[in-house]
Image (cartoon, rainbow, N blue to C red; front, side, top):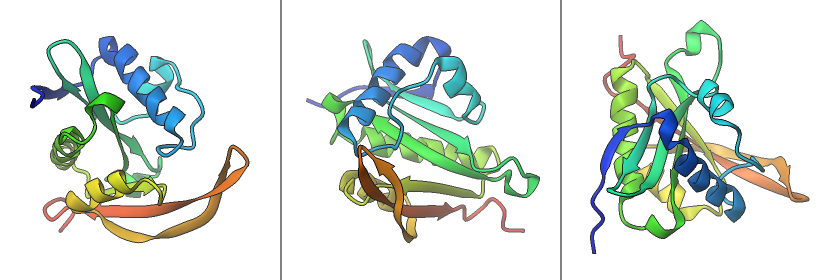
Length: 167
């Protein structure tokens, strides 16, 4: 059965469900170095304004995507880090692809020329999703962080806009 949903801007009222999906990703241990989810105020302040999306079904949010600034320096104003999370029971149904494609489009409307992502090498579905959406592998940061007593590598990915930042 195909899920019906719309990609829409995230609102503060969505946070409870967005946070629950984020906590699922944290618990799985393959999505982030974070160990807990912040408050809405903290999370919202750490992400680019008007660059937060949800996949909204009739009765639930299935996933979310957002951009975080990579630097406060003016020269990096068009560079952002991508986050995409899909709820456990909604994975494998194209929701992540829909969210990431919409976020890419939104980022270009907002003037971003480079999107980047850092993904654990074990997270093959996320690596595949990003590659499918035009990201390329830049390299591997070995033993970049220690999580639960285990050193973890991160694969660095980048997507350059074909239209923004070309002149």
